[in-house]
Image (cartoon, rainbow, N blue to C red; front, side, top):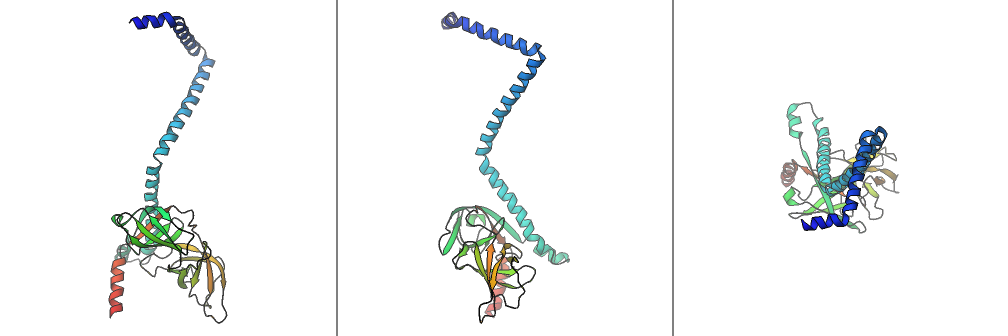
Length: 275
Protein backbone atom coordinates (compact mmCIF):
# COMPACT_ATOMS: atom_id res chain seq x y z
CA UNK A 1 0.00 0.00 0.00
CA UNK A 2 2.85 2.32 0.86
CA UNK A 3 4.48 1.61 -2.52
CA UNK A 4 1.21 2.44 -4.28
CA UNK A 5 0.98 5.77 -2.46
CA UNK A 6 4.58 6.55 -3.34
CA UNK A 7 3.82 5.73 -7.01
CA UNK A 8 0.88 8.15 -7.07
CA UNK A 9 2.91 10.80 -5.27
CA UNK A 10 5.69 10.53 -7.83
CA UNK A 11 3.68 10.01 -11.03
CA UNK A 12 0.22 11.19 -9.98
CA UNK A 13 0.11 14.12 -12.41
CA UNK A 14 1.02 11.86 -15.34
CA UNK A 15 -1.50 9.23 -14.31
CA UNK A 16 -4.22 11.87 -13.99
CA UNK A 17 -3.25 13.27 -17.40
CA UNK A 18 -3.55 9.86 -19.06
CA UNK A 19 -6.92 9.18 -17.40
CA UNK A 20 -8.29 12.56 -18.54
CA UNK A 21 -6.96 11.97 -22.09
CA UNK A 22 -8.70 8.61 -22.25
CA UNK A 23 -11.91 10.16 -20.91
CA UNK A 24 -11.79 13.02 -23.43
CA UNK A 25 -10.97 10.63 -26.26
CA UNK A 26 -13.97 8.51 -25.29
CA UNK A 27 -16.25 11.58 -25.32
CA UNK A 28 -14.98 12.61 -28.76
CA UNK A 29 -15.53 9.15 -30.23
CA UNK A 30 -18.96 8.58 -28.73
CA UNK A 31 -20.46 12.00 -29.41
CA UNK A 32 -18.98 12.87 -32.82
CA UNK A 33 -20.16 10.70 -35.73
CA UNK A 34 -17.29 11.60 -38.06
CA UNK A 35 -14.59 10.86 -35.49
CA UNK A 36 -16.34 7.66 -34.51
CA UNK A 37 -16.29 6.44 -38.13
CA UNK A 38 -12.60 7.30 -38.43
CA UNK A 39 -11.84 5.43 -35.21
CA UNK A 40 -13.85 2.34 -36.22
CA UNK A 41 -12.23 2.28 -39.66
CA UNK A 42 -8.72 2.65 -38.22
CA UNK A 43 -9.41 0.01 -35.59
CA UNK A 44 -10.63 -2.43 -38.27
CA UNK A 45 -7.53 -1.80 -40.40
CA UNK A 46 -5.15 -2.35 -37.49
CA UNK A 47 -7.09 -5.38 -36.29
CA UNK A 48 -7.15 -6.84 -39.80
CA UNK A 49 -3.41 -6.41 -40.26
CA UNK A 50 -2.73 -7.96 -36.87
CA UNK A 51 -5.01 -10.93 -37.56
CA UNK A 52 -3.48 -11.37 -41.01
CA UNK A 53 0.01 -11.60 -39.50
CA UNK A 54 -1.22 -14.09 -36.89
CA UNK A 55 -2.91 -16.20 -39.60
CA UNK A 56 0.20 -16.08 -41.80
CA UNK A 57 2.33 -17.27 -38.89
CA UNK A 58 -0.17 -19.97 -38.01
CA UNK A 59 -0.42 -21.14 -41.63
CA UNK A 60 3.37 -21.32 -41.87
CA UNK A 61 3.63 -23.66 -38.91
CA UNK A 62 0.75 -25.82 -40.21
CA UNK A 63 2.08 -25.90 -43.79
CA UNK A 64 3.44 -29.43 -43.48
CA UNK A 65 0.05 -30.75 -42.36
CA UNK A 66 -1.66 -28.98 -45.26
CA UNK A 67 0.86 -30.40 -47.74
CA UNK A 68 0.42 -33.91 -46.37
CA UNK A 69 -3.34 -33.55 -46.68
CA UNK A 70 -3.09 -32.25 -50.25
CA UNK A 71 -0.82 -35.11 -51.25
CA UNK A 72 -3.33 -37.63 -49.94
CA UNK A 73 -6.19 -35.89 -51.78
CA UNK A 74 -4.16 -35.73 -55.01
CA UNK A 75 -3.36 -39.42 -54.67
CA UNK A 76 -7.07 -40.23 -54.33
CA UNK A 77 -7.95 -38.18 -57.43
CA UNK A 78 -5.16 -39.69 -59.53
CA UNK A 79 -6.14 -43.13 -58.27
CA UNK A 80 -9.70 -42.59 -59.54
CA UNK A 81 -8.37 -41.42 -62.91
CA UNK A 82 -6.20 -44.54 -63.23
CA UNK A 83 -9.16 -46.81 -62.53
CA UNK A 84 -11.66 -45.11 -64.85
CA UNK A 85 -10.27 -46.49 -68.16
CA UNK A 86 -10.37 -50.01 -66.76
CA UNK A 87 -14.02 -49.61 -65.82
CA UNK A 88 -14.84 -48.64 -69.40
CA UNK A 89 -13.42 -51.86 -70.89
CA UNK A 90 -16.65 -53.82 -70.66
CA UNK A 91 -20.28 -53.23 -69.87
CA UNK A 92 -20.56 -56.54 -68.05
CA UNK A 93 -20.77 -56.01 -64.31
CA UNK A 94 -18.49 -58.96 -63.51
CA UNK A 95 -15.66 -57.37 -65.48
CA UNK A 96 -16.33 -53.97 -63.93
CA UNK A 97 -16.06 -55.49 -60.46
CA UNK A 98 -12.78 -57.22 -61.27
CA UNK A 99 -11.15 -53.93 -62.30
CA UNK A 100 -12.71 -51.77 -59.59
CA UNK A 101 -10.05 -50.18 -57.39
CA UNK A 102 -7.28 -52.12 -59.11
CA UNK A 103 -4.74 -49.34 -58.56
CA UNK A 104 -3.84 -47.55 -55.35
CA UNK A 105 -1.49 -44.55 -55.13
CA UNK A 106 0.82 -44.02 -52.16
CA UNK A 107 2.02 -40.39 -51.85
CA UNK A 108 5.56 -39.62 -50.70
CA UNK A 109 8.30 -36.99 -50.67
CA UNK A 110 11.80 -37.30 -52.10
CA UNK A 111 14.47 -37.66 -49.39
CA UNK A 112 17.46 -37.50 -51.76
CA UNK A 113 18.18 -37.75 -55.48
CA UNK A 114 20.90 -37.76 -58.12
CA UNK A 115 20.45 -36.36 -61.64
CA UNK A 116 23.99 -35.84 -62.94
CA UNK A 117 25.07 -39.51 -63.21
CA UNK A 118 24.49 -42.13 -65.89
CA UNK A 119 22.41 -44.20 -63.45
CA UNK A 120 20.34 -41.75 -61.42
CA UNK A 121 17.94 -42.52 -58.60
CA UNK A 122 15.60 -41.13 -55.96
CA UNK A 123 15.25 -42.16 -52.34
CA UNK A 124 11.69 -41.62 -51.16
CA UNK A 125 10.55 -41.22 -47.56
CA UNK A 126 8.23 -44.24 -47.41
CA UNK A 127 8.95 -47.94 -47.46
CA UNK A 128 7.76 -51.42 -46.72
CA UNK A 129 5.64 -50.41 -43.74
CA UNK A 130 3.66 -48.10 -46.06
CA UNK A 131 2.93 -50.89 -48.54
CA UNK A 132 5.71 -50.16 -51.06
CA UNK A 133 7.37 -53.12 -52.79
CA UNK A 134 10.09 -53.55 -55.43
CA UNK A 135 8.78 -53.33 -58.99
CA UNK A 136 6.10 -50.72 -58.33
CA UNK A 137 5.81 -47.77 -60.68
CA UNK A 138 6.33 -44.18 -59.55
CA UNK A 139 4.46 -41.13 -60.91
CA UNK A 140 4.27 -37.39 -60.40
CA UNK A 141 1.20 -35.29 -61.16
CA UNK A 142 2.47 -34.83 -64.74
CA UNK A 143 3.55 -38.35 -65.64
CA UNK A 144 5.94 -41.26 -65.19
CA UNK A 145 8.98 -40.87 -62.90
CA UNK A 146 10.55 -44.31 -62.47
CA UNK A 147 10.35 -47.76 -60.86
CA UNK A 148 10.96 -48.90 -57.27
CA UNK A 149 14.06 -51.11 -57.11
CA UNK A 150 14.67 -51.77 -53.39
CA UNK A 151 12.81 -51.05 -50.15
CA UNK A 152 13.61 -50.90 -46.45
CA UNK A 153 11.16 -50.46 -43.61
CA UNK A 154 10.92 -46.66 -43.99
CA UNK A 155 12.51 -45.86 -47.36
CA UNK A 156 12.45 -46.93 -51.00
CA UNK A 157 15.11 -46.70 -53.70
CA UNK A 158 13.69 -45.60 -57.08
CA UNK A 159 15.54 -45.77 -60.40
CA UNK A 160 14.24 -42.73 -62.26
CA UNK A 161 13.89 -42.12 -65.98
CA UNK A 162 17.45 -40.79 -66.20
CA UNK A 163 18.94 -44.23 -65.69
CA UNK A 164 20.57 -46.44 -68.33
CA UNK A 165 19.02 -49.54 -66.74
CA UNK A 166 15.39 -48.48 -67.01
CA UNK A 167 13.03 -49.95 -69.61
CA UNK A 168 9.43 -48.76 -69.79
CA UNK A 169 6.86 -50.22 -72.15
CA UNK A 170 5.35 -47.26 -74.01
CA UNK A 171 3.17 -46.65 -77.03
CA UNK A 172 2.21 -43.85 -79.40
CA UNK A 173 -1.26 -42.76 -78.36
CA UNK A 174 -3.94 -43.43 -80.93
CA UNK A 175 -1.64 -45.52 -83.14
CA UNK A 176 -1.02 -48.49 -80.83
CA UNK A 177 2.60 -49.02 -81.88
CA UNK A 178 4.56 -49.83 -78.76
CA UNK A 179 8.22 -50.22 -77.82
CA UNK A 180 10.71 -49.72 -75.00
CA UNK A 181 11.54 -46.31 -73.64
CA UNK A 182 15.23 -45.94 -72.70
CA UNK A 183 17.62 -43.17 -71.65
CA UNK A 184 20.97 -42.91 -73.42
CA UNK A 185 22.67 -40.70 -70.87
CA UNK A 186 22.83 -37.41 -72.76
CA UNK A 187 19.93 -34.98 -72.22
CA UNK A 188 17.82 -34.95 -69.03
CA UNK A 189 14.74 -34.00 -71.08
CA UNK A 190 15.14 -36.58 -73.88
CA UNK A 191 14.56 -40.35 -73.92
CA UNK A 192 14.44 -42.76 -76.87
CA UNK A 193 11.59 -45.02 -77.97
CA UNK A 194 12.91 -48.22 -79.54
CA UNK A 195 11.40 -50.98 -81.71
CA UNK A 196 8.84 -48.85 -83.58
CA UNK A 197 8.69 -50.20 -87.19
CA UNK A 198 9.47 -47.80 -90.04
CA UNK A 199 6.07 -48.35 -91.65
CA UNK A 200 4.38 -46.75 -88.61
CA UNK A 201 2.86 -43.37 -89.40
CA UNK A 202 4.30 -41.08 -86.71
CA UNK A 203 4.51 -37.31 -86.46
CA UNK A 204 6.32 -34.68 -84.37
CA UNK A 205 4.22 -33.98 -81.29
CA UNK A 206 2.60 -37.43 -81.05
CA UNK A 207 1.80 -38.28 -77.43
CA UNK A 208 3.74 -41.10 -75.75
CA UNK A 209 1.97 -42.97 -72.95
CA UNK A 210 2.44 -46.16 -70.94
CA UNK A 211 1.28 -49.24 -72.83
CA UNK A 212 -0.21 -51.14 -69.89
CA UNK A 213 1.61 -54.31 -71.03
CA UNK A 214 3.12 -54.89 -67.61
CA UNK A 215 2.11 -54.93 -63.95
CA UNK A 216 4.05 -51.72 -63.27
CA UNK A 217 1.96 -48.96 -64.88
CA UNK A 218 -1.63 -48.88 -66.10
CA UNK A 219 -2.21 -47.91 -69.71
CA UNK A 220 -2.46 -44.23 -70.60
CA UNK A 221 -0.06 -42.49 -68.18
CA UNK A 222 1.65 -39.52 -69.84
CA UNK A 223 5.37 -39.72 -70.56
CA UNK A 224 6.17 -37.16 -73.23
CA UNK A 225 5.85 -36.38 -76.93
CA UNK A 226 7.76 -37.15 -80.12
CA UNK A 227 10.51 -34.56 -80.46
CA UNK A 228 12.46 -35.93 -83.43
CA UNK A 229 12.64 -39.14 -85.48
CA UNK A 230 14.79 -40.64 -88.23
CA UNK A 231 15.26 -44.02 -89.94
CA UNK A 232 18.93 -45.08 -89.71
CA UNK A 233 20.36 -46.56 -92.95
CA UNK A 234 19.66 -50.29 -93.19
CA UNK A 235 17.30 -50.30 -90.19
CA UNK A 236 13.68 -51.46 -90.11
CA UNK A 237 12.87 -49.30 -87.07
CA UNK A 238 12.69 -45.62 -86.29
CA UNK A 239 15.10 -43.86 -83.99
CA UNK A 240 12.72 -41.66 -82.00
CA UNK A 241 13.56 -38.95 -79.47
CA UNK A 242 10.92 -38.36 -76.80
CA UNK A 243 10.73 -35.04 -74.94
CA UNK A 244 9.68 -35.78 -71.36
CA UNK A 245 6.83 -33.92 -69.68
CA UNK A 246 8.41 -34.30 -66.25
CA UNK A 247 11.30 -32.10 -65.22
CA UNK A 248 13.02 -34.36 -62.71
CA UNK A 249 15.01 -31.44 -61.30
CA UNK A 250 11.85 -29.77 -59.96
CA UNK A 251 9.83 -32.82 -58.83
CA UNK A 252 9.31 -33.10 -55.06
CA UNK A 253 6.11 -35.10 -54.54
CA UNK A 254 5.72 -38.61 -55.94
CA UNK A 255 3.01 -41.27 -56.06
CA UNK A 256 3.88 -44.99 -55.94
CA UNK A 257 1.49 -47.16 -57.98
CA UNK A 258 0.31 -50.29 -56.21
CA UNK A 259 -1.36 -52.77 -58.58
CA UNK A 260 -3.47 -55.07 -56.42
CA UNK A 261 -3.58 -57.71 -59.17
CA UNK A 262 0.15 -57.64 -59.92
CA UNK A 263 1.09 -60.75 -57.94
CA UNK A 264 -1.71 -62.81 -59.48
CA UNK A 265 -0.69 -61.77 -63.01
CA UNK A 266 3.01 -62.46 -62.40
CA UNK A 267 2.27 -65.89 -60.95
CA UNK A 268 0.11 -66.85 -63.92
CA UNK A 269 2.74 -65.66 -66.40
CA UNK A 270 5.47 -67.53 -64.50
CA UNK A 271 3.47 -70.79 -64.55
CA UNK A 272 3.00 -70.51 -68.31
CA UNK A 273 6.69 -69.81 -68.88
CA UNK A 274 7.65 -72.87 -66.82
CA UNK A 275 5.55 -75.23 -68.94
